[in-house]
Image 1 (cartoon, rainbow, N blue to C red):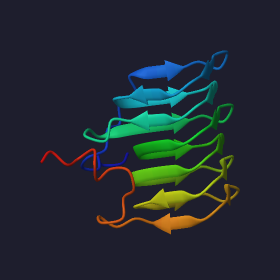
Image 2: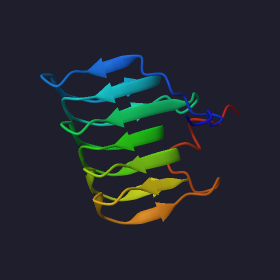
Image 3: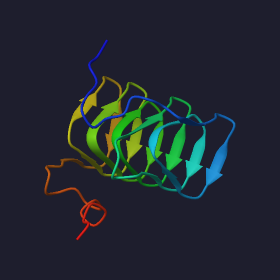
Length: 132
């Protein structure tokens, strides 16, 4: 299998089931898998490693901000993957995508800009990590 990457969690603690529809923002810590529909932002705690899996039947209408993102469903909104973004064959992303590392499979579609983030260009995290 694959070795664990530093700063990235591989454990999914929470699930939003296929028959579930959430209207409103979702904030989480650790790992989350979405099989249903979220109409709102999905934001991981930036101070801890996180993983979000968007399954083939899932849909998110809103912003996503997470360390490690695996997409095989539909996202309508901007995406920020601070460590790794995996776009699987049925991924459909409409919105700008900021990433540090990208793995894109044949068949995945992004309608928007793809932008590499270096350590100094991570939007939204500078204030969250500033303790002074």
